[in-house]
Length: 477
Image 1 (cartoon, one colour):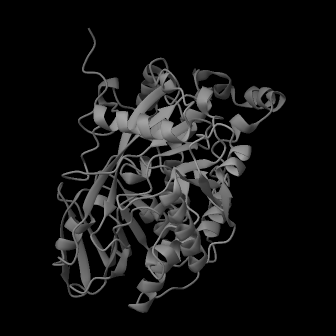
Image 2 (cartoon, rainbow, N blue to C red):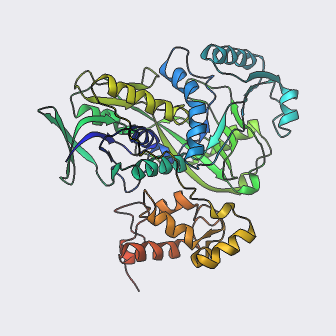
Image 3 (spheres, one colour):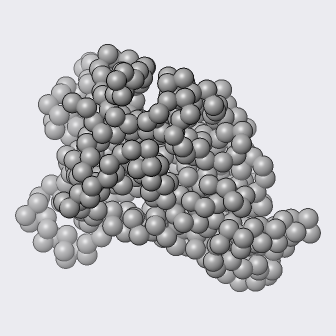
C-alpha cells in the first residue's frame, strides 16, 4: 500500500496533525519508534496552555501560540480531555524585574494577547495569599490554562485512528529513500512503509530524520527539564500557574496545579547530550525546590510523590521550523517544537496541512469524519448512585484496582481495548491514572500486569513497563 501521508512521530504534534488530516479522504499512517504514543516530550512537560505573551513578535511561535489557545480549548472539549482556564501569574522580584514585567506586557499586546493585566504584589496576594511577600509585581494572564499533555496526545491519536488513520508502534526509522515520487520509510526491523508525502514530527530526533533525506539545515538542541510532582494534599496551594520572569534558558521554575489535582513544580533547563537523556539529578531537584519556594514558600516538599524529566527540542534560531525541506520535495519538517508547542499544537497541525496542500496534496473533505471522542473518564465523573446502577450491568467497574486514584478494573480493561490500545504498564497509567498516586503502582501494578497478559493472551513474562527491555518479571520462583 502507498499512503498519501506518513507522519514520523506519535507525540502531541504528530497526533494533532493525524487528526487534522483525517478530516480529508486520505490514507495516513503514523510511525512511532516506542511501544506507545506520547513517549517523548509529550509525556513529560508542564501541561501549561501559555497565553502567548512570551514569544518574540513576528515569529511562528507568537503567531501559532496566540491562534492556538482557543483552538486547543475547543479541541480538548471535543476530545473529552480535561482542560482548565486557571490563568497564570508571572512574578517579579524587585525593580529590575518589574521592568521586565512591563516589557512582557507590551510584547503580549503586540502579539495580540487579550486579558493581560499588571498587578502589584499586594494585589496579586489578594488572589493568591500564599505568594511570597518578596514579589513586587505580577503579569496576570487570564487566557492561560492547564491540560494533561499525554491525555491530549492519546485522545488526538485515538480520534485519528477512529477516523481510519493507521498507527505503527515499535517502528524506529532507519532509512528514508525516494524513487519515482514515492518515499520508502524503512524501520530498523526491516519493515517498510511507502508514501507520497512524509512529515517529520520526530521531536528530539527530528534532525536525524531530516538528515536521512539529505537535509542538514538544522540541529536540535536537547534541553532537559526536571520536575517534582506533589501529592493532591498540595494541589490547592495555588490556583493560578505561578511563573517567575523568564530568562533565555526558558520560562523558569513554575508552581502549578494540574488538571488532576496535584501540584507540579519545575522545570530546570539544562542542555544534554541526546533526547533520550531523561535522568533526574539531585542538583536538578534541589534547584526546583529552591526556586519554587522563592515563589510559594509554603510548598511542603515532603509531599513529593515522584520526580521526572522531559527533554525539549530547541534550535539555535529559537523559532519553530515548519516548512517543506529544501533538500527533498514532499518532505515536511515540523521540528524544534519546544514551548509553547503544546499550546500551539492544533494551530501547528492546521498550518502544516496548509503547507501540504500548497505542495500538491489533494484535500477532499471526509464527510464521515467524527471529531468527537467518547469520554474515557465517564465513570469517575458519575455520582455514587449512577455508579451503582452502572456496576449492575458492568460488574468490572465495581472492582477497584488502584486505591490511590480509585481506578476500577473496567476502566483499565477499556484502556487496553480503546484506540490507541495500552499494551504496557505505563500505557495503562497514562490512560487511567492507575499507578499515579502515593504508592506509585506498588499495590495495583501486579493486577494491571495480570489484566494486560490476559487481554493480549501473553504470559506475564512478556508484560513490560514501557516496551521491549523493560519486562516486569523474569520467571516464577
